[in-house]
Image (cartoon, rainbow, N blue to C red; front, side, top):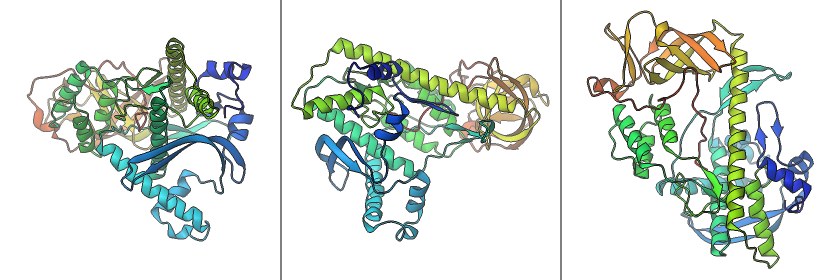
Length: 453
């Protein structure tokens, strides 16, 4: 990879300025020219590609005992997509004939090893947030015809685990060689935010100790898995966390619970990864580069800023395109789940079309409702008139304001109340802490990733 982008060349200056590739719903804005990113430096079946490889030797329990980072040549023999690998995981037998014996065995070994690595990582305190990732559905003319939540199957987890292992191994290897490099840093959450998170979880009726312990956060996330409170708790944990950034400082990665971590696996689309490959190149040539702390701090801040701008642009364009589509669907009815409750109304998200909007309290006309912060619900004067987190309702699209990025729904009827411990907490002191605290009317929480990279 470094062969195509010499340091301080015009191509390098442009890649550095961009910092990352940007993935929009209808196009990709690559960090590097497509002839490199999608051809010369991209793995393709039966074509030799020169790269850097992290060879990791592990025990059957997934404990790394030896690492070798070196230049290498790769010639792949088969290209899978996630759907195909998931089909193999679900039932390997039909794949015996289409694949060679070697590829079939290798794929089986990958599945087994990924499971071992994942189990070990989670046992050691790595946090994993499950948050909906919305993808826009476009027709052949590039027009929006819907949206769906991306499903992260076990086939995705295989790649995730191997990338995490490689990134950690390379960071440890560079540290052992006493090199300064761009790390992926995730600072500790602030004690105040963890205190608020603890109170919020307790307000939901979930028994928990101090969430200053990562293992308590992990336990609570596991407890709400599949429950109505899952999305609210995951978003609350996300808001308690600081942003992951790039920098040479040895602060570790909180979410992954790693002392040394960097980004190594994607030099085509991330500039920090390219800098790591250059260090490996220099070491392979018998040189020991000496990076400047100040320059790396500045580069880390620049790359962090570019990454955050790219993610913001992606979220914003998805929102605009989805709202533009929904503006032509006024009056359409859909099932939705309540994802947030505030004194001014309910945030709901469609179960099939994952659009989130606001049901303003003034539009719920069958009763007079007040906000109960202790149960995160709107409670009416009449018996059983209550809306809480996880409740399933039928709504209709009522109003779309593209300029203000607002989507308003109206409730048609209740479908099903969530089975939750919240109902037992009425009468307790109110708390203003919640996952949507401070959210403006019609706003949407930032979309998180399933992993804490």
